[in-house]
Length: 478
Image (cartoon, rainbow, N blue to C red; front, side):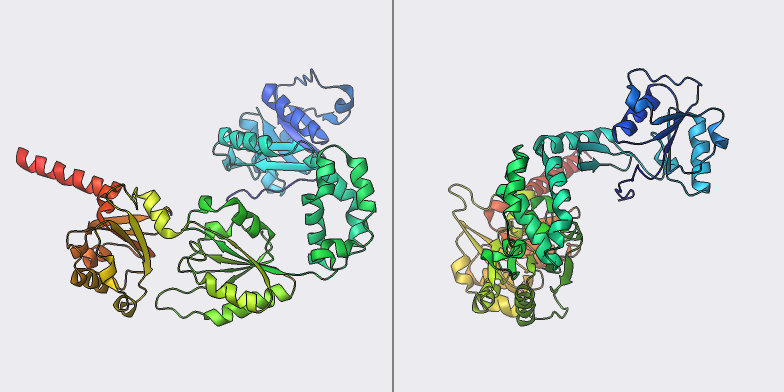
């Protein structure tokens, strides 16, 4: 992110506009719609303001002479649209005195840019692409326009009128936030969005104890809870809507090592973030310590999220955490996530089941060689069973040995799928007999192993075979 979205207070002073023609007029109309006062220097000498009403004209000061030497006292920002080479010179001048400047369609000479805007009165949504593609920004704006309630600005204004009176009656900040969340999501918010603000005012005035309204089940004491959230295999777009909502509501997030920064970026900005995960060969704080942190957070009134890679209940120890929370009397909920095995199958087109070919799936973990040694491999020899192994890179030689000793066919197709759904995802395919060698071709984990005939239907297998055929044809041609 190069450009940080900020909102400029247009009551602080005038905007200086330099430019001409329709480009300058378009910016002039935008600034007037936002309530700005404008000092306009028409670089062609023509201040054509056709279509602008008299009320708005009163907020325009028509500058004369060269804008490069114009008085900048009181100006809060400079905008150049259709200004030609003067725009670059104005950029140099603005930077020399520390004023924000925008030269239209020239990010290299701008210190701020104009986003695509969704305007709902007191609610304004800005969408930017860093100046790279205004068309993409407009398309995103159109999507947002389609889903935002028409009266969302009215709701913001309604809350703004009541903000100080309510805050004077609720001293605790977390309880205040809970109050407004309950109001926005409940019947009062619905009344405002339906255009029935008078009824909403009456309902809000009828709340005799705002703290009790904010507290759980009518209590004035803020009660915390824990939400176990599956973060999926890495791609933030695979988060569920419910997971996103939990991340936005969280006061504190306890996250695993494998949770990507892109997923953490979807969380509320002011939420505390506590790393509690560990990787192979690295010490962690231990499950008992994690359980204690979750319980303490909830009992202090916080909404805690335990953010786990994949799904909390697939080798994520979510069951142990639920038992600890239940024993401590802490409220909890679970939000499922896409587990890494399913993410790998989808990304690399591995059909984990296939009619008359693969009728069963077994998920297992083999964190270390001794884990593999404790597996009863004899139940995994059926060719119609797909075996998905989590955390199996270190134990790959033991996995190979166990399956072969139990009678699994050495030429059984195998795939090693690393960092699935992420931009640096990698796949290597071969046979069970080659498994340790396949692991060595992977540029680091985490990785999922998929073992079974269905791997031969995957995209990497088809690609590998195609390359082999092409190589044979080229050799024959020589």
